[in-house]
Image (cartoon, rainbow, N blue to C red; front, side, top):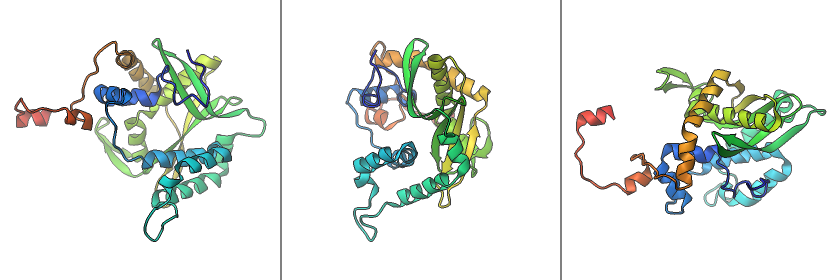
Length: 276
């Protein structure tokens, strides 16, 4: 297997990442086509850029400067009265950064104390159900046995409907469960234990994208971590076999890629639509 480094981490495909796994969970056919270069995904990259904008600031000054150098043209407005100034999303990003940077509780958690061994962007790797898996952790306090994942969210407490739980929940709940962050943190905790032999406590620092950002330190209960990891274990071999071309990818028949391949034939009844 490849020896993973900061330089080759994102180019390496010998290990499966959580984000790649989630793409295959959404639609195997689309993810496989993207991997093979047969389909270019069109999506708004602003949320990802904003998340990385905030992340890089707390990684190190050098990492933030590199991010700005590589993405400055996407951050600054090209036209209008604000030409040359940060776009609105990144003005909010600066507020999110300031909210955390001026919070002593965040500083102690994310950066640790002077005597702590804290690693930023630590690469973890191992095997899940025989599949090689890797990940990158925002901040790991090896001295105190915990790691922190920084998540940017639309809101933390505004209420939303959750169809699975059949109740209204704070937006952070839908964010964590909808994006599978409980599985991601369960996976990272497992990989850390494989590498160190120790149990680590995972925390999420959530910061909202509101005009006045909200923030919380969130702990995911062990039951949710176990459930998320169990779901990954149930599907990871199937996903890996598709990636390795050992089995044919299945189509979700609902995404943009599947719609591009759709041909009319069967008739769909109203009842079928309702029950779909």
